[in-house]
Image (tube, rainbow, N blue to C red; front, side, top):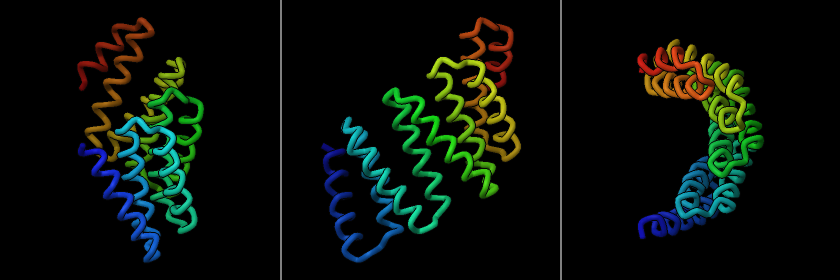
Length: 173
Protein backbone atom coordinates (compact mmCIF):
# COMPACT_ATOMS: atom_id res chain seq x y z
CA UNK A 1 0.00 0.00 0.00
CA UNK A 2 1.93 2.98 1.27
CA UNK A 3 5.28 2.13 -0.30
CA UNK A 4 3.59 1.65 -3.68
CA UNK A 5 1.98 5.09 -3.32
CA UNK A 6 5.35 6.60 -2.42
CA UNK A 7 6.93 5.04 -5.52
CA UNK A 8 4.12 6.37 -7.70
CA UNK A 9 4.36 9.91 -6.29
CA UNK A 10 8.14 9.93 -6.62
CA UNK A 11 7.96 8.73 -10.22
CA UNK A 12 5.50 11.51 -11.05
CA UNK A 13 7.66 14.12 -9.34
CA UNK A 14 10.76 12.87 -11.15
CA UNK A 15 9.02 13.09 -14.52
CA UNK A 16 8.01 16.68 -13.77
CA UNK A 17 11.47 17.64 -12.50
CA UNK A 18 13.03 16.23 -15.66
CA UNK A 19 10.53 18.20 -17.73
CA UNK A 20 11.35 21.50 -16.03
CA UNK A 21 15.10 20.79 -15.79
CA UNK A 22 15.41 20.98 -11.99
CA UNK A 23 18.55 18.85 -11.58
CA UNK A 24 19.10 19.50 -7.86
CA UNK A 25 15.65 18.32 -6.79
CA UNK A 26 15.77 15.54 -9.39
CA UNK A 27 18.81 14.08 -7.64
CA UNK A 28 17.10 14.36 -4.26
CA UNK A 29 13.91 12.67 -5.47
CA UNK A 30 15.87 9.90 -7.20
CA UNK A 31 17.52 9.17 -3.87
CA UNK A 32 14.15 9.09 -2.12
CA UNK A 33 12.77 6.81 -4.82
CA UNK A 34 15.80 4.58 -4.30
CA UNK A 35 14.83 4.14 -0.65
CA UNK A 36 11.22 3.42 -1.62
CA UNK A 37 12.39 0.72 -4.05
CA UNK A 38 14.60 -0.71 -1.33
CA UNK A 39 11.51 -0.88 0.89
CA UNK A 40 9.90 -3.01 -1.79
CA UNK A 41 12.95 -5.26 -1.95
CA UNK A 42 13.90 -3.98 -5.42
CA UNK A 43 17.62 -3.66 -4.83
CA UNK A 44 18.58 -3.28 -8.49
CA UNK A 45 16.06 -0.45 -9.04
CA UNK A 46 17.22 1.17 -5.82
CA UNK A 47 20.87 1.06 -6.84
CA UNK A 48 19.96 2.47 -10.26
CA UNK A 49 18.23 5.46 -8.65
CA UNK A 50 21.21 6.19 -6.42
CA UNK A 51 23.63 5.86 -9.34
CA UNK A 52 21.53 8.40 -11.26
CA UNK A 53 21.48 10.73 -8.25
CA UNK A 54 25.26 10.33 -7.91
CA UNK A 55 25.77 11.18 -11.58
CA UNK A 56 23.68 14.33 -11.18
CA UNK A 57 25.59 15.39 -8.06
CA UNK A 58 28.87 14.95 -9.95
CA UNK A 59 27.59 16.83 -13.00
CA UNK A 60 26.57 19.70 -10.73
CA UNK A 61 29.88 19.52 -8.82
CA UNK A 62 27.83 19.20 -5.62
CA UNK A 63 30.38 17.46 -3.41
CA UNK A 64 28.07 17.29 -0.40
CA UNK A 65 25.34 15.49 -2.35
CA UNK A 66 27.95 13.30 -4.00
CA UNK A 67 29.16 12.15 -0.58
CA UNK A 68 25.60 11.46 0.55
CA UNK A 69 24.78 9.39 -2.54
CA UNK A 70 28.04 7.43 -2.24
CA UNK A 71 27.21 6.67 1.37
CA UNK A 72 23.68 5.56 0.45
CA UNK A 73 25.11 3.24 -2.21
CA UNK A 74 27.49 1.81 0.37
CA UNK A 75 24.64 1.23 2.80
CA UNK A 76 22.51 -0.61 0.24
CA UNK A 77 25.44 -2.77 -0.82
CA UNK A 78 26.24 -3.52 2.82
CA UNK A 79 22.58 -4.48 3.33
CA UNK A 80 22.74 -7.04 0.50
CA UNK A 81 26.10 -8.50 1.50
CA UNK A 82 28.29 -6.89 -1.15
CA UNK A 83 30.83 -5.76 1.42
CA UNK A 84 33.87 -4.97 -0.72
CA UNK A 85 31.76 -2.74 -2.98
CA UNK A 86 30.24 -1.05 0.07
CA UNK A 87 33.74 -0.35 1.39
CA UNK A 88 34.74 1.26 -1.91
CA UNK A 89 31.75 3.64 -1.82
CA UNK A 90 32.24 4.44 1.87
CA UNK A 91 35.94 5.18 1.31
CA UNK A 92 35.09 7.61 -1.48
CA UNK A 93 32.42 9.27 0.69
CA UNK A 94 34.98 9.56 3.51
CA UNK A 95 37.49 11.21 1.16
CA UNK A 96 34.87 13.78 0.17
CA UNK A 97 33.95 14.51 3.80
CA UNK A 98 37.62 15.03 4.65
CA UNK A 99 38.25 17.19 1.57
CA UNK A 100 35.30 19.39 2.57
CA UNK A 101 36.40 19.54 6.22
CA UNK A 102 33.06 17.97 7.16
CA UNK A 103 34.00 16.31 10.44
CA UNK A 104 30.40 15.34 11.24
CA UNK A 105 30.09 13.18 8.14
CA UNK A 106 33.69 12.05 8.47
CA UNK A 107 32.77 10.42 11.78
CA UNK A 108 29.72 8.78 10.27
CA UNK A 109 31.64 7.48 7.24
CA UNK A 110 34.35 6.05 9.51
CA UNK A 111 31.62 4.23 11.43
CA UNK A 112 30.13 2.90 8.20
CA UNK A 113 33.54 1.59 7.18
CA UNK A 114 33.75 -0.10 10.57
CA UNK A 115 30.44 -1.83 9.95
CA UNK A 116 31.49 -2.95 6.49
CA UNK A 117 34.76 -4.39 7.81
CA UNK A 118 32.94 -6.07 10.70
CA UNK A 119 30.58 -7.74 8.23
CA UNK A 120 33.62 -8.72 6.13
CA UNK A 121 34.97 -10.55 9.18
CA UNK A 122 37.84 -8.12 9.68
CA UNK A 123 37.27 -7.28 13.35
CA UNK A 124 40.62 -5.57 13.88
CA UNK A 125 40.02 -3.16 11.00
CA UNK A 126 36.45 -2.61 12.18
CA UNK A 127 37.70 -1.71 15.66
CA UNK A 128 40.23 0.75 14.23
CA UNK A 129 37.51 2.49 12.23
CA UNK A 130 35.13 2.53 15.22
CA UNK A 131 37.79 4.05 17.50
CA UNK A 132 38.50 6.80 14.96
CA UNK A 133 34.77 7.33 14.38
CA UNK A 134 34.20 7.60 18.11
CA UNK A 135 36.92 10.24 18.48
CA UNK A 136 35.51 12.35 15.65
CA UNK A 137 31.91 11.97 16.86
CA UNK A 138 32.92 13.12 20.33
CA UNK A 139 34.85 16.05 18.88
CA UNK A 140 31.84 17.32 16.93
CA UNK A 141 29.23 16.44 19.55
CA UNK A 142 27.41 13.81 17.47
CA UNK A 143 25.99 11.95 20.45
CA UNK A 144 23.81 9.62 18.37
CA UNK A 145 26.78 8.35 16.37
CA UNK A 146 28.92 8.24 19.51
CA UNK A 147 26.44 5.84 21.12
CA UNK A 148 26.40 3.66 17.99
CA UNK A 149 30.19 3.53 17.81
CA UNK A 150 30.41 2.58 21.50
CA UNK A 151 27.91 -0.23 20.94
CA UNK A 152 29.76 -1.43 17.86
CA UNK A 153 33.05 -1.42 19.77
CA UNK A 154 31.45 -3.44 22.58
CA UNK A 155 30.11 -5.97 20.07
CA UNK A 156 33.43 -6.22 18.22
CA UNK A 157 35.47 -6.75 21.36
CA UNK A 158 32.93 -9.29 22.62
CA UNK A 159 33.21 -11.23 19.37
CA UNK A 160 37.00 -11.24 19.77
CA UNK A 161 36.61 -12.60 23.29
CA UNK A 162 37.92 -9.46 25.01
CA UNK A 163 35.04 -9.18 27.45
CA UNK A 164 36.67 -6.55 29.67
CA UNK A 165 36.95 -4.08 26.79
CA UNK A 166 33.49 -5.06 25.59
CA UNK A 167 32.02 -4.30 29.01
CA UNK A 168 33.92 -1.01 29.24
CA UNK A 169 32.57 0.21 25.91
CA UNK A 170 29.06 -1.16 26.60
CA UNK A 171 28.82 0.69 29.90
CA UNK A 172 29.84 3.97 28.28
CA UNK A 173 26.72 3.96 26.06
